[in-house]
Image 1 (cartoon, rainbow, N blue to C red):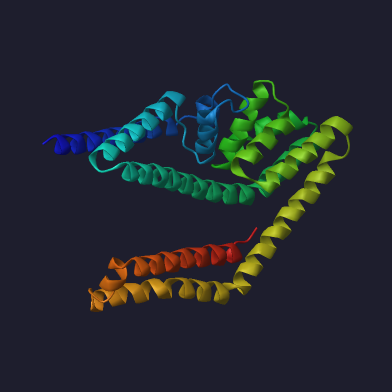
Image 2 (cartoon, rainbow, N blue to C red):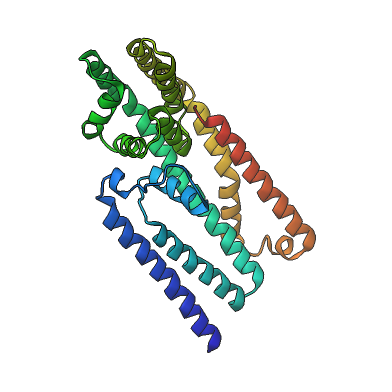
Length: 289
């Protein structure tokens, strides 16, 4: 009875933390990025680092909500460790952190791709404002309402840091580090050179826009040329998994001796590790940067 009660407690805590996360995300999703963004300029702790990465994906949570969710997760891990054994808690902890990190990285990658696609139009508009006599910072700030998500949120966060005293190029560089964007890093360098040494910023931005458009055309051409190779890579990756599933369906007891024997378990572990390594290598080969 005690074990069942602990299991119900763990499930209830996990459900409660999920409901808190969903409620806060829906409540804060409609807020502008500048309002949801904290007054902090640089990350001061692990929670600040996590919140920065969540902000890059468009998820705005207060620090207290993050602490509550982390507390509930730790309670669930400890409860499962008591119910089963210590290894189950360790596996849940590592697996939960890994899955959450993978989800955030995937969201950040999608956001980064959209931001890069929106940057040429944004920089062209900023160049037109510069040609009309506006300063660089005024031109940057006035374009906040003229761009769409996700670039709009990035610009709002950059503007918020600038309002709190950080230089414009430092704010852009900080945003580039959060979302891992080489393009924003290069833009921050252009702004820094213009601010510290002067120069023709309009010509530099024109060249930068041309580079972005040429890079996008090259990426699309490369993706089209390597389409057959990518399909072949996916087939080679999925064939072993399909074969294993087909064997288990056709003859469920066929792999029982291998699963039960120590040597067979080692062989299966090595095969799984090689399969994961092959998937990782193929994925790295298919990535376009």
